[in-house]
Image (cartoon, rainbow, N blue to C red; front, side, top):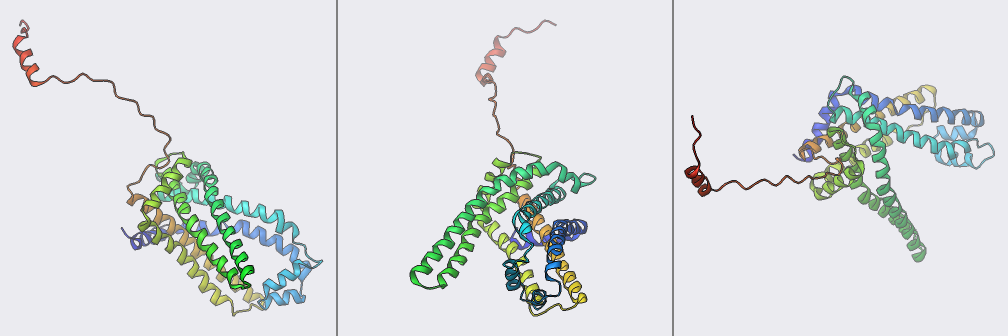
Length: 323
């Protein structure tokens, strides 16, 4: 099968699971709404109808926000420090829970309530898999950081700020090259663990990584599609959003509605991508990646079968049984 077949199968599968798409869209709203309510309770009294809020409505949100952060009225310090860390961890856990349920539906055995059953059965091993995945993620982040630093040093040496931009572009490329195979192996190992009900996530990750590296013709185009579709969606939304300044309550509500439509499409993409990877797993003949260390027990020594000559001699000299 080619990349188009995998992606088309993923879209067909996502269309057959509208409730799964709805769950994937709605559940991440919980930490987002908590964070928005906390920020609103802090920003509301400080901004009100001031020039800062007017600047936000006019579209100059980032400069206004940075000026607000440096002003004495800044009340976001608890949220931007420990609060942001807590919300980041919460969002990560929500994504792991969601993935446990999604893979349970798409690659599991199909019990009466596969999503909740998948969360119950797969969350622990998915958490262990996430800890393994943190290692290549950290390596890719360090390599990208060193690349950015190198670009900054070149910019100072040549007195040319374009080296900074080149360093950031090179850092993004380095991070993607190092991180994308690990990301694919992370997903593939979790699919194999759910399908075969295995639990050795450390071994499974590296076995899956070997498969990904051995089959670039399958995984590279697939991952490029996974990157391109969300970026295209984000670009279309940005092109629509940038020239539009919501200046009334109705316009703000409409903008929020459009934004949620975009998030629902992203949820549809997420289910489609998972289904595409499950189809790739089946195309690879469902390898058992997450089984434990196997111990081979040697077979007991069997006597050699008699040769034809020995059989004939035995029949000649054998004494017949009396009737």
